[in-house]
Length: 225
Ligand code: NHR
Ligand code: GAR
Image (cartoon, rainbow, N blue to C red; front, side):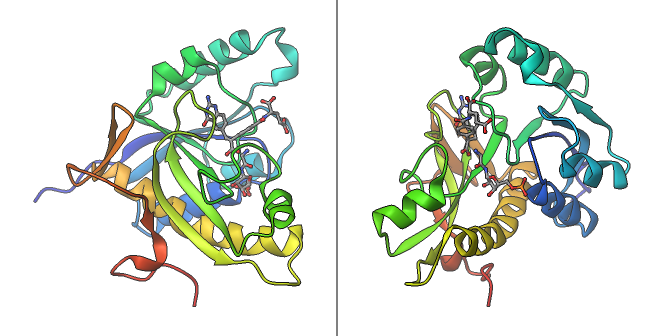
């Protein structure tokens, strides 16, 4: 079989960019057949921008506070993304809710990592809410982005046990560690055409995925020791 050409990707961030870093690393190691054409942040001065620059990736800042509506911000964002003609848009700690026009434009070509076991704890402050609810398990999910906030179909999840002495910080550390495993994996599947979304349904290897893949149930174990 001939070698696949790298899929053009644009990554959207708002902060630290550790998931961006995990994807950059997986591209470098050959695990993802993709190329990050640009990293765009809605906040200036965040560490994720530095990570991108260090790897020679073009960066842009589009400060949402400079726009008088979400629609105008999203229109500008869409235009600046399209310059790079990505086939995949990756939300990696991107903190702005996107409006329907934007979502429609990229539907089926946009992924997000969310710090909870969806459908539990959609939205913000997921670790505190998991602690408050007293759940036994918590984790993270990679899903296709649709107009339903954190409600698009889930591709893969990773689960951790919540311990008696856990706090937001300890949960964040363990969940983010899992994010860095499952997000590059999902992106790699997308880049080789193994996963797709059609009519709100995920397909894996052209078969409907009836439930999210659990990282600890994969033939090749991808969870931490
Ligand atoms: N947009 C749509 N339409 N659908 C999704 O599933 C999206 C989305 C935009 C971002 C990421 C999401 C997450 O993983 C995401 C998924 C931000 C907020 C939020 O409330 C909620 C969910 C997510 C991202 N943001 C506030 C807002 O007013 C701002 C918060 C802040 O700036 O700190 O946009 O959790
Ligand atoms: C990650 O935990 C991600 O799941 C979460 O923010 C963190 C970003 O970390 N995303 C959201 O909460 C989206 N609303 P990173 O910038 O180091 O990748």
